[in-house]
Length: 153
Picture (cartoon, rainbow, N blue to C red):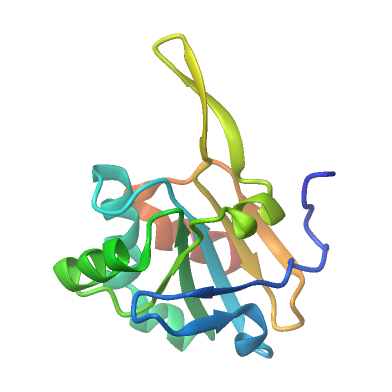
């Protein structure tokens, strides 16, 4: 499958959030969405990224954005992560990796000479019409919000 490009229609999805509720991309039609993929709940980089979005959530909402985080962690893990850091946005449990596959972020990685499959940290900014407006391949976890606003601001 070809990699997603700016201008492509964002792949539709539905998954459970931290509260066990179904969340679909179509729920946000007419809004801009920051859809960010991250490897694991409550790890240093992922926590820094989530807290950047949390700390700047009001300014993102003020600019018309919704924030959705996606990882392969389950709902229970997401619930703990949300409660521990008071995250005000949806975290989706993509345990079957369908969303990851659709967005091309379930990739081969390597560490210490071993290869394995894992989540590429990547952010997609989706416009009000459901099209991909921006793709951030090199996420600055501590400044994730500033990175988003700098690219779309």
